Length: 480
Ligand code: NAP
Ligand code: MG
Image (cartoon, rainbow, N blue to C red; front, side, top):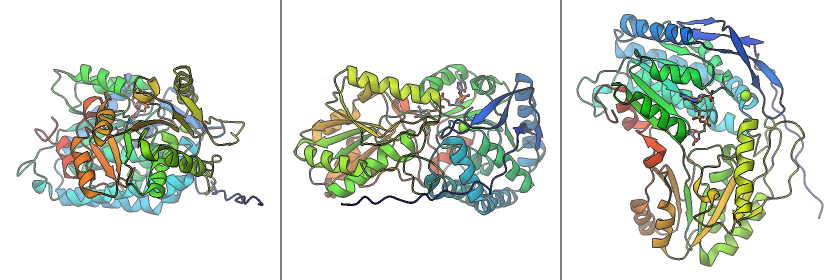
């Protein structure tokens, strides 16, 4: 049989103009930082730009500009007027969607297919959705006249850079708060382009401030006495540090942390659909997904069939240039993350797991890891317990539905789970028993701004999105 290869289908990067250096976005203006760090394209190692490192003085300036904007402008503005700014931002994001998608892919390493079809449309949807809420907040279930906190400090990770920004900024602004946001060090560029959108939308100065830099900037924001609420998405370790720092400070806190989601395939599932769901659950966004289905639980009777079909499907996954429209798996976001994935995979082999990857050539430059599955995994193995945050799936089996629940819940995390079964009553039974904030049935990794997202146990506190997510941005609202 002759092989069928895809012709290259590269997306052009001409639509984006990347500045040689970026400042900090404070009080509506870009202010040059004193020191810089590079923005890297993880697919090539190419230096894209220079990003400013915010100092403690910059954090103070940004917080006081947010306070000033809150007191003088934003809290006084009629809610319907606030809504107009959010609608304007949403429309500009749609108009400039291709530009944002290309920049996200260059800076993050995720395939253009995902940034174009998932990340950026969801970002615009979050702004549209929250714009709709801005003048209807008395119906959010938080009282007749819910009051914003004031100044929000938001800290986000690198896996969905612009989407995580939208998850923080859209509800904060809709509810009448102002915000200082710190993007992750390795993915600052779309946040800085978003700052330009704020200028284009003529958002009043100081309502949104963006401070780039390392974890010290995040810590300074967390510890700043004039910040009223912290919204953090990131690792469980940093989340715990933040929880300790704000304890007794009176600050409100939401934490969206790590996960080790179980994707459970019952014997009566539609196997071909389930295999697609397994692939989507762990290889979407290179597995850099907090709610990834990183633990596959397969009922014993169908184990061999599922594994055969999964391996065949994995052999068709295309890994490579994220800017190619046919690419399924792009680059690992940073050398640090690649080292972490390699370390945990090596531990998996040492502890007796068996690793399998399809034949796949890794590019010479940049950071890459092949799609991998581990069989022979037990619940005691590190790869069954710790978040790998990469394209690595641990496969476990179960005999009875009860055993599936016990194994699925045997984790310190509680963010996501997937159930695959043709039987509605089994799906409802399992959903009731699973300790996870988000549960998908016969699908996986589906997101919508109207749907609350979040975890419990070590996966965090509070919800983002939907009516439930709004409560976190009010005094005395949910999750205070
Ligand atoms: P991370 O190391 O916790 O970093 C997250 C953010 O916190 C970054 O902006 C980081 O800055 C900053 N930071 C680091 N140390 C800090 C400190 N002491 N105080 C305040 N801020 C600090 O997490 P990551 O490795 O970038 O992201 C991956 C993690 O995020 C995974 O565990 C994943 O599960 C989780 N995640 C969860 C969700 C969710 O919704 N539940 C969504 C996405 C990701 P630097 O970039 O400069 O280090
Ligand atoms: Mg980068």
